[in-house]
Image (cartoon, rainbow, N blue to C red; front, side):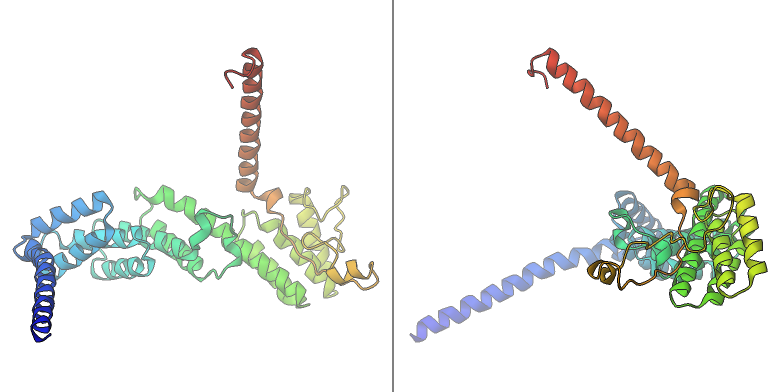
Length: 334
C-alpha cells in the first residue's frame, strides 16, 4: 500500500510538472515574438492583423508600439489606427477616447480630420443598439445624448474640414442625425400632451420649426404648435400655425381637404382602450394628441416602401414564370 501511494504521488508530480512545462512552452514564444521587434517589425505585424480583421491583436500591438516607440515615425500613424481598431471591434468608448486624445495631442496633424470623422462614427454607433442590424428599431425614441454628441462632432468636422475626403459621407450622416434629433423632440411633445403639459408641448414643436428646418418633423412641429396653443386658449397663435401648415404641407393628415385643422383627430394611439372594449364604450379613456407622420413626409420611409413593393412585384413575376414553365414541362422542371 505504501509503495502504491509513492507511485501515485510520483505520477501526480510528473503530470503537474508536465502541464507546467507545456504551459510555459506556449507562453514563452509569445514573449519572444515581440521581444526584439523593431518599430517597423511592429508596424508590419499590425498591418497584417488589421488586414485580417484581428482587431484584438492589432490593438495589443498598437499599444505596445506606442509604449516602446513613443517618438518613432510610426507613432502618430499607430494612434490613428488604434482609433480605427477600437471602432471596428465595437469598443466605441475607447475609440472616442483615443480620437479625443489624438486631437488634443496633434491638432495640426495632416490626418486629424480622420480622427474627428471616426469619433463621429463611434458616437453614432454608440447611440445605436445591438439589435439594430437585425430588427427595425426607432432610435429617435432612445436617449439621444450620443446622437447629440455625434451631431456636434460631425458639425465641427465639416466646419473645419469641408474638403476632407470623408466630408460627403459626414454630410449624409449629419442629415440623418438632424432628422433623428427633430423626431425625438416630437416624441417628447407627444409625451407632454399625455401629461397635459400643453405649453411644454407647444414649445417643443416651436423648437423643431425654428431649429430643424427642412426635416420631415417640421410638419408635425407645426401641428404640435397648433394643437398645444389651442388647448392653452391661445387661438391666434394656433391659427398662425395652422395657416403655415396648410400653406406648406396641405397633405398633413390633421388637415381636411379645405385646410381646416381637426383638433380632435388622433394620429397615433387611436384604438379604443381595453376598458372601453370591455364596457362596450361606457368607460373609455380619451387618447391624448400624438403626431407622427413619417410615413407621409419622410422620404427614406417612402423609398423603403417603394423598394419593398418592387421586390414583391419581382417575386410575383418569378413565381408566375415558374408556374408557366412547370405547366409546359408537366411539373418535371419546377
